[in-house]
Image (cartoon, helix red, strand yellow):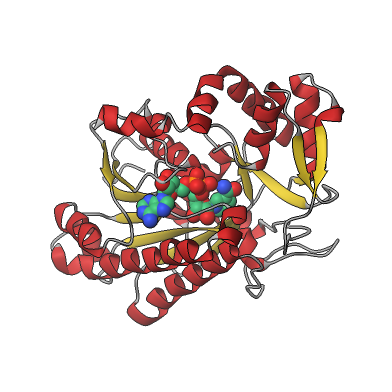
Length: 351
Ligand code: NAD
């Protein structure tokens, strides 16, 4: 893509957002990016070290729920696109504090949509806004968890009803519906993607793969929920980035795209693979009481994005996992700083 785009990326200091920013800067030399992130426990500017001096990148510390701030960013920049990653993203935390998930994931999305809707009036002569009279192009990063759980058979397609089971997935499903409503009611040019579980560098070590790698390295027990037979569809984060990039470029306005890599794995399989690769013993596994409402199986039908937009994943699961485990082995200091909370001081040092 050579058209100059100015993209507001929210939640860009998190796991997927930081990978996405590096991806865009690498592959789109005409893009300018503003990263809005409030830096919760999950936001880590160290993830963006490689790009922080890039003149096409800037960071704003702030909350997507802060209407005034979001408005001022739309006044200051002629955004052509918004990609909304900002969210509370950990299911276990949503069980403890649902309200935080509702305000961030739902109200925060609504604030962004509202400012995106109004923005063309701020910059009526903007080339992009002439094409999209209704507002800037808005992409919502969502999850397959909005569909609820599958039985042993079947796949999630985009037309399935939303049946979320956790406060996290219910908040993401709600946000998807608000995004849809802004398109149907106000004509805002939106797209939504629903991706399966991601793995790769810079994932906060509370999530399955980095948690297990970290515990393995420290010879700590590996807590596995229930019988460990919960099945998830895994995708390398770079493949998620390339899928969003493809949707921004070629996706049809108003459409929803599932993203997945056809890699169904039981949690216990992943844990055993990590143990084997790191060279530890399966005795470290400890089965713990299952999470309430724990969905049994997720699996994505990615036919729409592969056949209509020509996207396909580039990583095999084996290659992706090998590289990812190696990355965590090579970046143990990163894990240390995240676990100890040291990374939070990085912002004070840099800004
Ligand atoms: P993450 O928890 O690593 O990062 C979330 C980021 O959002 C953090 O940097 C945090 O500081 C920021 N943030 C939180 N609340 C904010 C607020 N009020 N204002 C501004 N910034 C705020 O999450 P992730 O794994 O990178 O996920 C990113 C998005 O992708 C989320 O919307 C998530 O629902 C979705 N998603 C994740 C996965 C996955 O496997 N991780 C799969 C599918 C979809």
